[in-house]
Image (cartoon, rainbow, N blue to C red):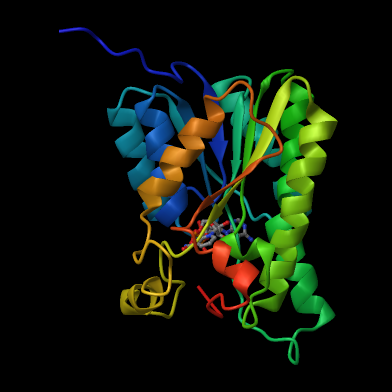
Length: 255
Ligand SMILES: NC(=O)c1ccc[n+]([C@@H]2O[C@H](COP(=O)([O-])OP(=O)(O)OC[C@H]3O[C@@H](n4cnc5c(N)ncnc54)[C@H](OP(=O)(O)O)[C@@H]3O)[C@@H](O)[C@H]2O)c1
C-alpha cells in the first residue's frame, strides 16, 4: 500500500488557545499532517496536557505552554518559548479569543480595550515575534463571519475582530514575500460558554446551508491555508454562507 506523504512533516507550529474547541481541532489536524505543535493555553491545563498526549501519540513533538495573553511578559515571550522547545516556528495560528457580551449602550472603553488586547493586539505581537525568527511561513488569524457587518450583542468583540481583519491584510503586505497571512471567518460552529448547543442549532436554520459547522471544518481550512503557496491577505468564510446575509441586512444578531 502506498504511504501518503504528510504535508507538514517536521514543521513547527504555535496554536494559541489550543487546548479546547476549535483550537484543539486545528492543532490535531496539523499534527496529523506531521507538524510539531506548541499547544498554548491559559486556564485549560488539563485539556492542554490531554491534547499534548494525543499529539504525542501521533508521533509529533509537542509542548504545552501556559501564557496569559493579557500579560505583556507572557505575550512577548511566547514565541521564543515555543521556539526554544521545538526550533524555528514556521506556522502561527492566532486562535485564542474572548467573547464578552455587550451592546452599543453598555460598551465602555475598558471592555473595548480588553477585547482588542486579546483578540487583536496579542496576534499583532505574536506575528511580529514570529516574523522575526523565520523568513518563510504562514500565519492564520481566526476572525468571525460577522466581520462584514455587526454583532449587536458583542460590540467590543466584533470591533476587535474588525481590527484583526484589517491587521490580516496589513501583515500580508508587511511580511510578504516570505510569510503568507490569512484569515478564517467561522460562523455557527460551537455555542459560547453559558449557552447550550440547541442555541446554535436554532440559529443554524437561518444559515443558507441550513446547518452548523464543525470545528473540523475550520481545521480543514487552516490546513488548506498553511499548505497554500500563493494565497495571502485572504479571508475564507467557513459559515455555510452566513456572511452573505450581512449584505441583505438580516444576519442573525449573535453566534
Ligand atoms: N465558536 C464559534 O462558533 C466561533 C464563531 C466565530 C468565530 N470564532 C473564533 O474562532 C476562534 C476559536 O473559537 P472558540 O469558540 O473555540 O474559542 P474560545 O473557546 O472562546 O477561546 C479559545 C481559547 O482562548 C483562550 N484565551 C482566552 N483569553 C485568554 C488569555 N487572556 N490568555 C490566553 N489565552 C486566552 C482560552 O484558553 P484557556 O481555555 O486555556 O484559558 C480559550 O480556550 C476564536 O478566535 C473565535 O473568536 C468562533
